[in-house]
Length: 77
Image (cartoon, rainbow, N blue to C red; front, top):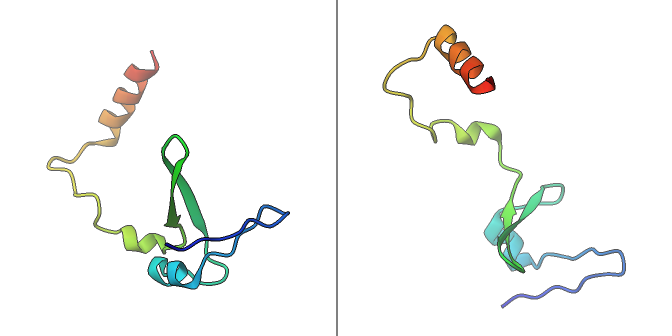
């Protein structure tokens, strides 16, 4: 288990083994995601947006702009 100490400024140094596993480097961003009360997951948040391409499947049927606008209008009422 890796540990880190919090400085007086609230900063920590992420241990090298954890940085390597996350694939993060100086200047990269990380997120702290709360999984449960007091339990957090450290997630690399510096991936290129283009890596998301293809993660959402294309819809079976295309929806027209008019249909989208009507749906938005109905939801607004």
